Each structure stands twice: as C-alpha cells, then as structure tokens.
View 1: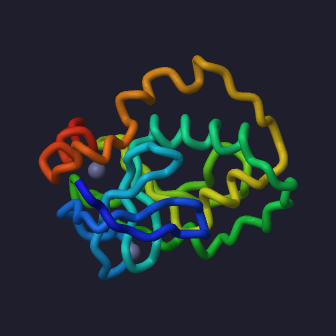
View 2: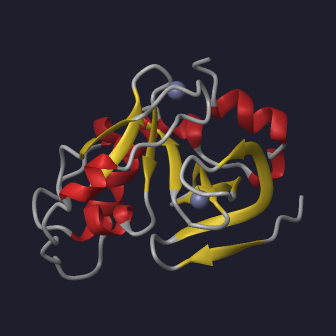
Length: 168
Ligand SMILES: [Zn+2]
Ligand SMILES: [Zn+2]
C-alpha cells in the first residue's frame, strides 16, 4: 500500500493520508493515522495534536526519552489557563480529564479513563522528551508495544479502528 503523508517536525511524527473517521477533539480537523517511532497513533491534520492509547503513550515517552539525542531543555512553567480548556473524548463523547502530566515536561494533557485514550497538544510530546529527568528505559517498559507497531501494508480503516478503539 502506497501511503503518503507528511512529517511533523514539532513532535517527530508522520501523519498519513488515511482518515481514522473521528474528528479532532480540539479543532475542526480530521484525525488521520499517524506513526510515532513506528507506533500506530492518530493525529489531527490541522492542529497536529496527537491521540493515543495511554499504554502506547507511556512506552513511546520512555523510548523517546531514552533515545533523545539532544540536550535537556528546561520546561516552561505550567500554564493554569490550559487547565480550563476542556474537550470531549472522540470515542465516548464524555468530557476528558484535563490534568498535569505526571512525568517530566510540565505539560497539561487530556485523558479519558473510560476509553484509555490520551490527547497531547502539538509540541507536548517533544517537551516531555526534552525535559530533564530519568531517561532509563528497560525492555519491560516496552513490553506489549509490538502489537501497536504500525504495519503500513495492513492499514485499513477497519483494522485501525479495531486496534485503536478496541476498548469500546
Ligand atoms: Zn485538531
Ligand atoms: Zn472516552
């Protein structure tokens, strides 16, 4: 299958020209299938935010932090105004929880406990990756992620949705 897409330098993610069939929770854009270090996630064509399963996000962050080739960058302070910007889960349509991410980076993320989905605004993945702190990563941290690797030869809307939203 000959997918085209574009590389988003903000978070080092490749957005494919393949609609997920769900709208962006933050803007009027459409979600497309995206690849982050080979992991299958979704991203918004318009605002470049990222929607991913929480377990995938945890493994991706550990991997990105362990392999980050650049310098540490001190994160900017949390912007409390961001905590008031709520959004709705694209899967269950309930309001997502807006909270400070528990790891490095001082970023505010949105998550849905019911669906196990998380939303990262554009540049948040990079800010988490660059922030100082523990960069250890073990095989155990990445266990189970193989099932989430993006196989471009098998991308279909149905297969993606099955893997991505299997929780509901
Ligand atoms: Zn968007
Ligand atoms: Zn949900």
